[in-house]
Amino acid sequence: MSDPVVSDAVASEAAGLVELAERIAREAGEMLLAKRPARPEVLATKSSPTDVVTALDKASEELIRTRIRQARPDDAILGEEGGSTGDGRVRWIVDPIDGTVNFLYGLPEWSVSIAVEVDGQVVAGVVNVVPRGEVFTAAKGAGAWLAGERLRCNTGVPLEQALIATGFGYGPGRRAVQAEVLARVVPRVRDIRRGGSAASDLCSVAAGRVDGYYERGPQDWDYAAGGLIAAEAGARFGGLHGKPANPGMTLCAAPGLFEELHALLAPLNPERDS
Ligand code: LIP
Image (cartoon, rainbow, N blue to C red; front, side):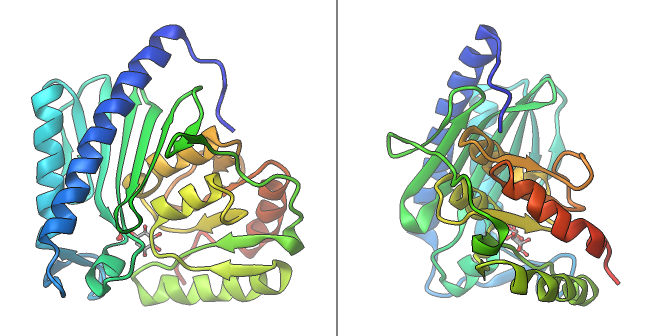
C-alpha cells in the first residue's frame, strides 16, 4: 500500500525513470532470449553449490549498467552480480536475471528486475518476465501496470482461502527451517505456489494471481521493483514486526491478509537458519 502522496517533482522524476528502466529491461530481455542456449552453462557458484551464475547473468547486468551509465552517468548502481558502484541521490537496483535456476532449466519463470531509488525511496520499478513477454511497471503514486491495464491485488481474502507464494534459499540449514515453517503454513492456507523468482511472485500478488507472498532470503535486487509494483496495486509490502522488507523476511499481501500472515509467521521465529 504505497504512500499515495508524492510531490509533483518526485512523480515526474519517477515517470521518466520508469520509462528509461522499461526500455533497458526490454533490451536486456531481448538479448537474453536471443542468446540463451538450449542449456546454459554454469559459470560459477556463489553462496552454495546450487546458487549458480551463468555468463548471461553477467552479460545482462553489463548491458543494463552500460545503458544506465550512457543515460545517467552520475547515478549509483547496485547489481546482484557487480555489487555497488557510484554514489548519487539516484540509485538503480538491478537483478539481471531473477530466477536463475529457472533460466538454467528452461522454466518460463525468470525476469529482469530494475528498481530506481531517489533519496533512499524506491520510486520506479520494472519487472520484465521475459519468457511470458510480460512487462510490469510502477511509478510511486501512479499505480502498477501490465500491458496498459492497471493492476489491483486481491482484497478481502481470509487466510484459510489464500493462495500463497513462497520460496527457499540455497543453504541446507535455511531450507530445513523454511520447510519447518512451511509445514505450519500449509494447513492454514488454501495452497502454496513456488515460482522461483521473488520479482515475479510479487508481480503475481499485484496482478491477483496469488493472494500473498512471504520469503526469507531475497535481497534488495530480488524484491525492490516487485515490491513497489505490488504496493502500487494496493498490497502491503514489508518485513516482520513493522520492519520494512529485508533479507531477513519479506511479506506481501492486501491489508488484512498481511496481518493474518504476519500473525501466523511471527511466532514461528522464521528469521533463522538453524
Ligand atoms: C531467487 C529468488 C527466489 C528465491 C531463489 C533465488 P536469484 O533469486 O528470486 O525468490 O526463492 O532461491 O534467491 O538467485 O534467481 O536471483
